[in-house]
Image 1 (cartoon, rainbow, N blue to C red):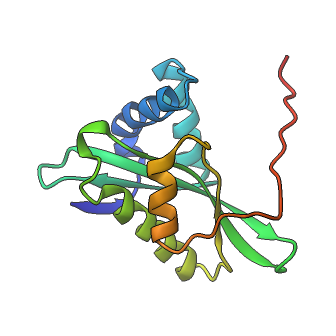
Image 2 (image 1 turned 135 degrees about the horizontal axis):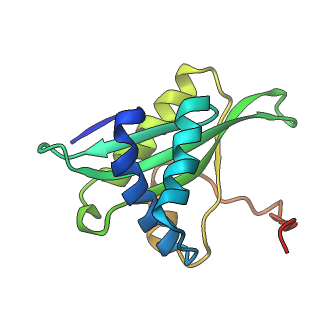
Length: 149
């Protein structure tokens, strides 16, 4: 398996994987809409995407990071916004490899840390994150204000 920074040539595979990610969180979207969103990220370089492929080159998963500044640490950090592994590739180390690529990227860019959130029901993800040293925040709540309808 290889994990590499995603490029425009990966857009078709990323779109398929991202559609699976959205279905997992029960917010399915049309593939052209997903491709447009991801294409903009790749073109504008306002996020960092990594894609995992098996030995035959089949896309197995992706991770997407967004830069931000930690006001409490007064340093740059990364938001690990999206992580998805295709159902057929789960429990084979793909998620861990993607998480390690995210960490290596954060370290290489001088970030003070990585932040992520996940569904309370995503027990497999939580187990992976905690095994990799992520600590669940017991001090802060996450809130969301929808500005759409």
